[in-house]
Amino acid sequence: MKRLKSVEQLAMIPYVGRWLLLSCVLGALAGSASALFLYLLDRATDTRIIHPWLPWLLPVAGFATGWVYLRVGQTVEGGNNLLIDEIHDPRKIVPKRMAPLVLIATVITHLFGGSAGREGTAVQMGGALADRITHVFGLDRDDRRILLMGGIAAGFSSVFGTPLAGAIFGLEVLAIGRLRYDALLVCLASSVAADEVCRLWGIRHTVYAIAFIPPVTALGLGSAVLAGMAFGVVGMLFADSTHALSALAKRKLTYAPLRPFVGGLIVAVAAMALNVPQFLGLGIPTIESAFRDNLPVYDFAGKFAFTVVTLASGFKGGEVTPLFYIGATLGNALGHILALPVPVLAGLGFVAVFAGAANTPIASTIMAMELFGTHIGVYAAIACVVSYLFSGHTGIYRAQRIGQSKHLFLPEGIRLSEIPAIRRARRKTTAAPVQS
View 1 (cartoon, rainbow, N blue to C red):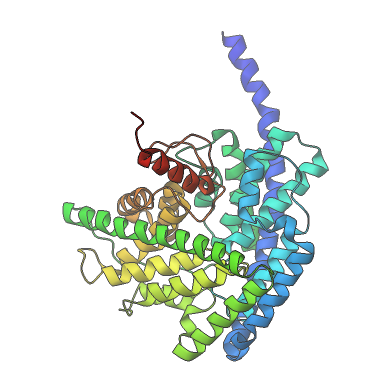
View 2: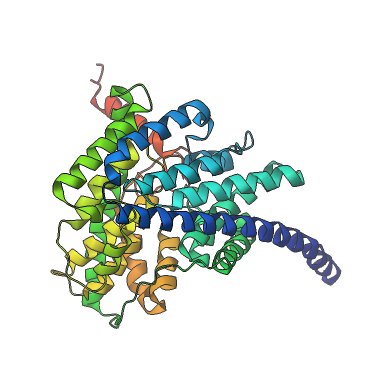
């Protein structure tokens, strides 16, 4: 028995060494790509602020982006969903064009004022780079799946500066209610490496400070539960609204470049007419303000609407930073009625709306502790788990699979995009008259 155990441990050494080497290579590439992306994103944002007329060109930028994707980017149009599908059902190499296309398109979105995020771009770049590595080293199907998960983790980690949350996100985002531990080492190592490399390039992530987190009390926990319910419903509405508007745009505007043109026109006119520049771009200054000031209670709704129109019409970017904005400002508003300090509720909303919309409560809880300190852990866990449950079986990533349904019975392994058809079929079966 002892001999068997020693052989097993010895066999583990080359296994761990191989994956650590591949993960470090992936992390270095993904961290460098994210550093370049974040640098360009800062320059684009600064340029838009200096030249406030640039959003008027958003429709033209949208048309150009849509035309380029129609001509050369249809194979990578799926974005994050393409990566999730490839991990579940590996079929082919992720096209090399995914990384440069999404990087340039996202910078254009932010330069001209689209309301979008950045995680989608970083994750897609990480996934595309991971697939390049699998091709260079000749990895098999199973190893490719693991490295793709590491690419997702590396992209998420480096763009937000949260290596532990990034590692868990790479494991958790694939399926509701199930984690894959075969990729734990790769996700952790690539996530940490990507974050360190990104920082070595001189990138500094935004610091969100919560000066005081009260001790855990029954009243505080009750407030976290109520807030989590609200966060989950908002996360669900965000995902459903984005998917529904996207489907409507595809039905009404069959020529793809017209969708971002019309969406960009709506965003530009609304932003200028209402004088709400805070709803454009990432919205980092407003997120920071949510932790220290009393904001208008409608702020979260405004960002919600601008982001849904931007993303549903086909602009590139991500959903997560806008979800941070929506959550932090909603938490700020809830501070008027719940028994937790406003900064704490802003922090809970920051992570919990994302937890509900992305179905990633564990990664979101860890992110809260990385960003705001470990003392918020209990409150964050309650808010994120409740949000996850109250968001239902929907999400921003329609390629997610059902590993373990939340409360209703759903077949294991189906995509979130397939659930509406199953529900319609069940309603028809229930409504069918009984034959005598």
